Length: 296
Image (cartoon, rainbow, N blue to C red; front, side, top):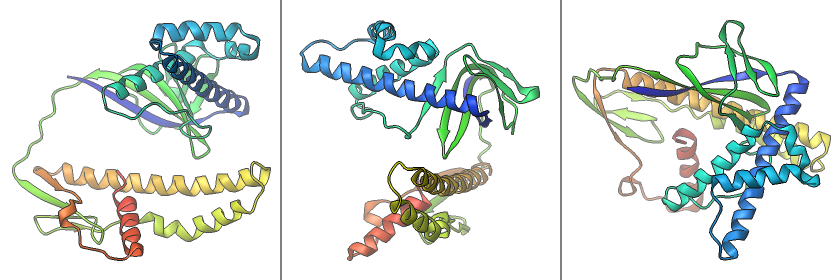
């Protein structure tokens, strides 16, 4: 069978490369939003929306216009991938798999993608990206398979590279010899039918006071000032820390359960199984616990 797998690493760019990546991500966001606004205007005018090929022609026109001539500085295929993302978003909407496409906001999911033209040098822990050059990355494991595309994204003030590969593997067969039931909860992260249980790891509570202190400090700063940006970076760093610890706990716990030779039957938070909670404060506290313990 063919396996698609992504290998994600933290990039270590220099100052010029970091500035270029911010410019690339901003240009992709600009192209996506401009194309979405055009599609909305076409729809309101009673005409048929443009396809991917039509949007690419519009992109070529934008590069020749004086006010958007700076788009020529960005790799063309990177900008075209933004139009592909918009086309995919429309398809998911029409297939009732997602909501209507929305405009992208600066600082929220900044990323760009290369469909080809990249080079990988694992022995020296570096990757070549067109118009960016060779970038070092923190190599934590080997990349397996043939590289199909590379995505660069920003999160928590850091840049990451996700290398998607394709390779042929044997059909996996789980050596299950028994069945175990799993009931998730708040007091206990998971209770298994064999009598064992897993305690929750509520990392949000451990960082709640420090997060609140930094958020209050940020609220007292003038918005978009240098001090406000520094305070915002501290808040983002705590959120990233919380998310990383939670993700690590979830992956390690589920891997431990799934690797045992047995089938797992999961029972989630069903509405009929909830204990009735009267006060709004209690309902909020319970919902907060659920979102922190079982976010996915």
